[in-house]
Length: 332
Image (cartoon, rainbow, N blue to C red; front, side, top):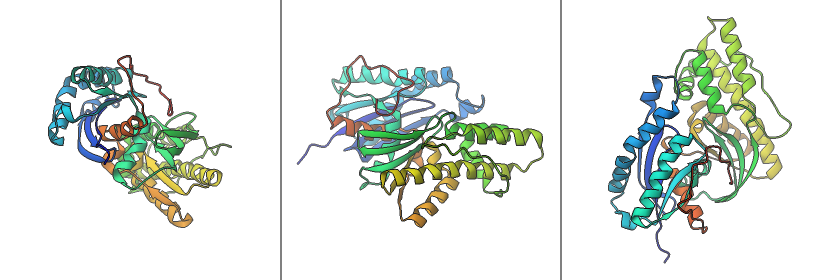
């Protein structure tokens, strides 16, 4: 019988300080998340310097909680896996530096994890039988990628955004219509009261890339010219246009790869409108559709530990020269 592998995941790429213990890549023993949303709400968005300071203040306590909740000791841990990119450089450095110190002190293996790989791996926790190959749509505040996942550590990017990430567009629309930060959940909530009656432009590129700046600019201009425009209608029409673009490229990817298993990942994948539209797409086209449970859509350390596990059993390790790479690409 193969030995169980216990991974300690550390996530500090933006405004959540999270530490988790995951067994064999899919069994979450603990997943502690310390959110900074209330702090950054005051400023209308994430302030990098404040985020870094908050990570520094809580990371040790969050780690202790994760070990305690998992009901294990550091002796049981096989590898310590911090997110080392992409993300805010200061925030990433807190997690990476802490992980390096911890690995040195406990004589454990160290392995840096790509944050985007973590979002994909969140689905392995929710869906215990999910295996590659599949198509993955990664939609978050910083990323919009359409990826062919050939294996647990082998990725082929089919398309990505040329300008704003979809989550960034949600946040800007929320700010324009006066909803504040974080924008995604607030737009989703208000859109439920609206009608799809405002025609917004869609950029259908010749390949599988995305562009959300045109939709975002149209919303800004409409709101500026018509201050009394129905905000709920505007939010729902924005969601429709953005989702139309996602759907167009998913269809292209299916035609291109012949893969009919679609996986969603990233913070925006908990949007109820997008999920509902993609469920209808799956039903009408005989597709398999997978989403992470809502608490695993946003940044958390369990998904980092899961991705770390698959890289670790594939023979990968980091040494103490590991550094934060804020613009790290998927597959690097």
